[in-house]
Length: 516
Ligand SMILES: Cc1cc2nc3c(=O)[nH]c(=O)nc-3n(C[C@H](O)[C@H](O)[C@H](O)COP(=O)(O)OP(=O)(O)OC[C@H]3O[C@@H](n4cnc5c(N)ncnc54)[C@H](O)[C@@H]3O)c2cc1C
View 1 (cartoon, helix red, strand yellow):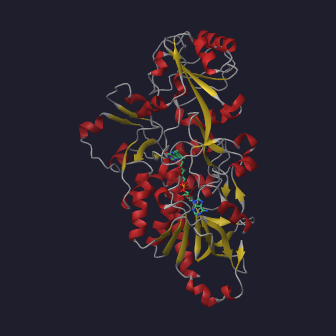
View 2 (view 1 turned 180 degrees about the vertical axis):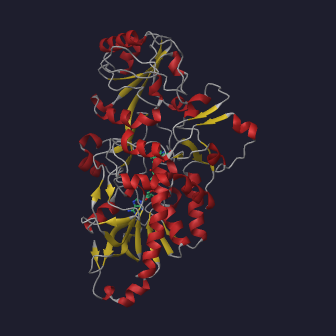
View 3 (view 1 turned 135 degrees about the vertical axis):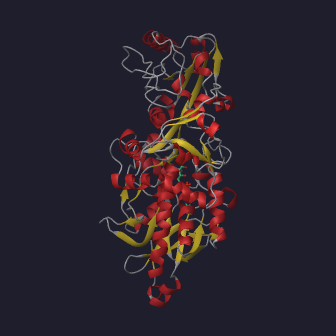
């Protein structure tokens, strides 16, 4: 934290900063803050750590699956870019997703009761409204594919699109289809953008109010930017040092699905300036990914490394043992549990095992994986893959015995209750015996996506000090703020949280900046 010298604290100097908002980052949260601050009359400067071609943060890597609460499918229809005839629309089945369900899934289903109920209720309640707000600013929407139930059924030639569970839409062109129009909107309203200008510290006055940011330019020189600050610079998932510090050594040497820029320095700069740390610092979003994924995510990987077909087979570790109920829920509800469980396995590796039937349900992404083993003899495949063969065959035998009564084909549109019987570790749905040749084994490793711990904030997106009162001049949004997600999150909530908190942070920062 850099304290201003005496002259900097003078009134004349403060007036020079009147109406100025400095936004950190160019992900969805930061750009929502920038758009909102501009709409409310502020002059906005955006500082981005990444070079221009790589702007957009984790947001840009996503397929932009969005979780929205609604009571009538026509509320979805009116958002969509494509207009459907009544006939076409009647072939699409969309189950309403009331906000109570959204709240339940964030707080209880994935969050083990720990997320802050006030924050969760507040942001989920705005999930539909924020989509209209983004649409008004150039983001276009379509029916979701990846990570929706439809994605599972379409591969099987189903004529009927079925959507259950809240993830019904995505942005056209994914995350790029969010950040590109958002940035264009901000620039059209006069935002000034500095790339390769990572913020390093906050500037405070003698009252401890935040009055600006220190950033470092490409020549290594520190530059001061004065104004009201919105931290939208993501979590600390790309820092293995910070992951080790807060999440533990198991999280140190992992492949990252995220951009390399999110190393959390502005979270910790805010903490040095008095901000409280809240939320699940020992937790992060993590999924099973291709073992040949690069160590850092980026525009070449985006969503391509995920391996989420565990529902259609079993997953074992090197010792040949299952370690998780692969069918306890839809894959998009439990992929974080699966990713986290991989951390505890020997050599942090797992093996997804499919028979010929399960294989037909794998996402097309599996075709990109180089490491896999396929053939008619499971024991040979286990040996080739490096799995203890005898223990593995015992696992298969026990599983097949416990699943032999399940005779219906997989139904990806239902939690089909085809469970194992008598296993200590059950498979609750889609438990078909692994018996039809050819068999295949895909190794998977855990890949970290984003961290859950962050800065304390309220529903005005003011950053709170340790006494839980706002620090004047400091606002935050997106994954830089904590207490929203613990242990996991329901797919499609991150971008909604980012846009809702960004919009509010920008509005409040603009209002504060008018008064200083
Ligand atoms: C591969 C992948 C797929 C995902 N899929 C989905 C999905 O489909 N739906 C969903 O809801 N969520 C998804 N997520 C999660 C989602 O990406 C995040 O919840 C969301 O993008 C967070 O937005 P943000 O703006 O807070 O952070 P980000 O989008 O990560 O933006 C942070 C920005 O801050 C910049 N920055 C970092 N440090 C500094 C600094 N010191 N100074 C200046 N700038 C800095 C970064 O370069 C970046 O531009 C996915 C994440 C990944 C990695």
